[in-house]
Image (cartoon, rainbow, N blue to C red; front, side):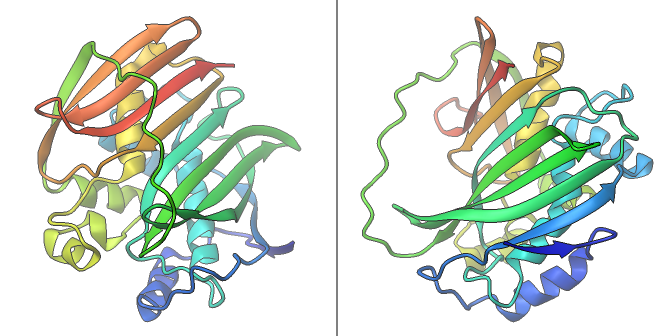
Amino acid sequence: MTDLRFDSPPGVLPSYLRAVARARRADPARPLPDRRAVLPDVTADPARLARYAEVCGFRQDGTLPPIYPHLLAFPASLALMTAADFPLPLLGLVHTANTITVRRPLGARERLAMEVSTDRRRTHPRGTVFDVAAVARTDGEEVWSSRSTYLYRHATEANAARPDEHPAPDIEFESWWLPAASGRRYAAVSGDRNPIHLHAWTARPFGFRRAIAHGMWTKARVLAALGERLPAAADIEVSFRTPVELPSGVRLSVRDLAGRTDFALTGGDGVRTHLRGSVTAR
C-alpha cells in the first residue's frame, strides 16, 4: 500500500474541481488504488466544532461528538476519491451505510493521527459500492474508527438484496421539520458540497427530484437527539435506506434493548424509512 502523507488537511476545493473535471468518467470494473492518506496531527478547530454542534444539535461539553472525526478525515477521503486513477466519479455518489466505533470519549482539543483508505469494491443490485475506512489514533492507540459505504449507480446484473429481517422501532421519540437549506448549512460546516445536497437544480442531473439531506447529518442529528442514551464507548451502525428530500418532515423512533438502542428515521407519514441503525455499548 502506498501512503500519501499530508502535514495539514488537503484542500477541499481542489478536490471538487478535480471531481467536476472527471464527472462523467467511470470504470466500475477497475480495482480501487491501493493507497492510504495519512494525517499525522489533526485537531478540531473550536469555531468549526461550535458551528457543527449547532447544525447537528449536539451539546458542547468539552468532548468531540462521536461523528466529528469523520469531518477531520473528510478532506483526505476526497483526495483519495478524486485521484486521477480512482475508477468511480465522486459527484453523484450515494452514501448507503456507516459504522463508527468510539473506544473512549475524545477531548475537544485532542490531537489525533488519522489514516484513510478505500477498499472492498463490490457489485450491488443498483451498481457498484465501495468503502472508505478511517482510523484515528492517539499515541499509537486506536481511539476511533469509521467505515462508510458509497454507491455508484449504474446497470448491473446483481441479485436484489434480501429484505431486512429486523423490525423497525415503533416508539416515536421526536419529529422534525427539515428546511430546504438544511443541506447547504451542513455543507458549509462539513465541507461536503456534493451537488445532490445543495439545490434541486444541482441534484436533478444525478437523478433526484430535490436536494437530499446528507446521510452523516441525519445520523448526527439522531445521535444528538439520543443524548444520554449514548454510551461513552460504542459501536454506532446506520444504513441509509431512502433519501430525505428537502424540505420535508421526519420522525425518529427508538427502542431500548439490553446493551443496545435501535432507532429509525421515517418520513412525516411514518411510512417511508430513511435510515435505520443501532447503538451498542462496548
